[in-house]
Amino acid sequence: MSSVGTLWTTNVQTSGKRIKAAAALGGLTLGEPASYKHYEDNKKPEFLAKFASGKIPAFEGSDGFTLFEGMAIARYVCALAPNAGLLGNTPHEAAKVDQWISYLETEVLAVIRPITAMLNHYRPYHKPADQANRELLPRPLKVLNDHLATRTYLVGERITLADLTVGSVMVVAYENVIDKKTRDSYPHLFRLYETIREHPLLKEIWGPTEYIDAPKQYVPPAKPAKEEKPKAPKAEKAPKAAKKKEVEEEDEDDDAPPPEPKAKHPLDELPKSNFSLEDWKRAYSNKETRGADGALEWFYQNFDAEGFSVWRVDFKYPEELTLTFMSNNQIGGFFNRLEGARKYLFGSVGVLGEPNNSLISGVFILRGQDHKAVVDCAPDWESYDFKKLDYAGADKEFFEAALAWDLEIDGKKWQDGKNV
Image (tube, rainbow, N blue to C red):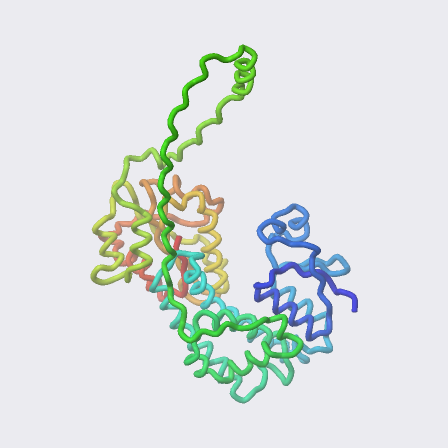
């Protein structure tokens, strides 16, 4: 059978494997690019001309149709094989398939991803966030397990894209957070997972699952060994004389002007402070936020109010926010765009509320007394309101709650957040 198109992905990307699994069950063939090196080829103009996001999975059909985003590609591939019933066979089934996919991605994957990101040092470790996310897992696992207690598959009597999503989502949980005891507590969900992963057409696509006997815990990265500075070589005696021609040639080599010294950031010109943001970030990551010898106690003992300032941050357009996990991704994007100022700031910002009724709020600790000098490297900084806080006085409760991830505003409770 001729290929229906080309799929750009990697051999570890679970959303790419879900697409390949859908194609296999639909009897379709997917081609691969002749060569692809992630983080390089996806930044090239020819890739971006087809896939503006620069992300994978990415798909180009044999007819030239292009798509990015894993869910969109998976649905499209399923639609190319309607007889396989991967999207459901009736409007009711189709709606249920979408329901369970959304539930798995927003209630399970969105909880697991922050944990694995911290465990693998992709984001700063924050113990309360780790614990809070782990505590969110039992409820969706029970919902899925109870539903499957009287059913072979999530929807109908055949495998659908919802079941394939169990295969692509739960592997992250089973390999990082869910140990044997917990797996045994949700046997029906685990049974479906093994059914999908061990299916003869899919087993090679998924690969083996590395189950864990105990939940993985955070281990701080090893500090690199200090390198000994090489001893300065003894100065060599200058040659007694040099021929005129050789001197002229050396002069010609020196004609190029020396490189201009890199301009200093204005914040580097501020008086030296005894408060170290790096030390604070370590204290915040490794200590309980509240309580004796906690991160807040460390902060109050060491903070330099002249060299740094504390700010409340609020997204100006909460009416634009929809799903809470998408709002949390928005915070992550904002933090990514602050990369150029990371050494001058610390942030704890979260999503409060529920889908379609939420807001984004939190605190920043910034070098200096002018927030704009720190955050204007992010093009969307003006989408946020900044208000200087009286962190030890009138605004102390807000400040501490934002750091402890238990902030509540107008009845909206903290759902998820990020640190920078």
